[in-house]
Image 1 (tube, rainbow, N blue to C red):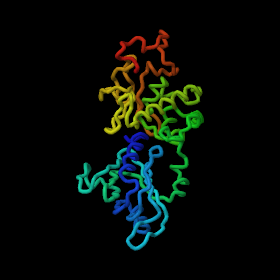
Image 2 (image 1 turned 45 degrees about the horizontal axis):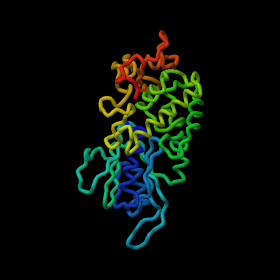
Image 3 (image 1 turned 90 degrees about the horizontal axis):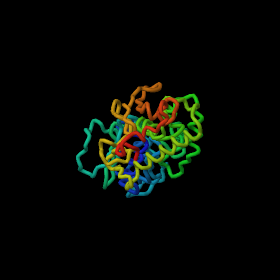
Image 4 (image 1 turned 30 degrees about the horizontal axis):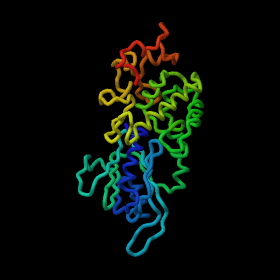
Length: 312
């Protein structure tokens, strides 16, 4: 499932392949995109840059087309795409065989050197730069932990403002903090020792600061091209534990019934919220009172584990 780190890596790869190159051909199954291409052709424009904002991938095109006759000044365009659950972007050399069937193609952008193919992309639109900044999905976005101008305090304030929401749902609210999905939601709350069903209003500022710090740490580690923790990004293997073993990449997500890597308690799973999102947590490390200790003994559960099972 694409989350902010996946989109960031996709945008970075597309930028390296396409930025500064001239579009030679554009094709799409979306009539609205094809209509724009007829009215204001993409061919001859330059790809200025490709960037991510939360879970949105933005491809910027110049307002000047290169032509043998003249360079016509036209409106700059931005292609906004959102992957939802199953969309993806691939890069190929010309004549290279696609790894997905042609029927899954939704957008095709060709340059002389590379072809970018959007497979099963469910949301796509062309906008002018001004219209992009006014569009609801973009203007309402919360701070993005992967952005250079990320403001930790702004994210904390926005999450705290959602006092009536369970903290898991607050983290999925892209207006509070951008880019977090089901995987990071569960992993971040485990790392922060916060129960996912606690209402935000029951948390203190320090709790939410800890959550935002964990989200920033995990997401940035997973887009680092050379992480000291050994996190691989080129294979798309999201990691939060820092462990090299592919079977030990995550703390709790997808591990229902398996022993907690901290305390050995079976990981719990439940559908949560109005959209029945998957939530995983350790009932001992993340009890309803939010404390990361065993209520009966008052002992830190990590101290009762062998060194190999403790948090790294």
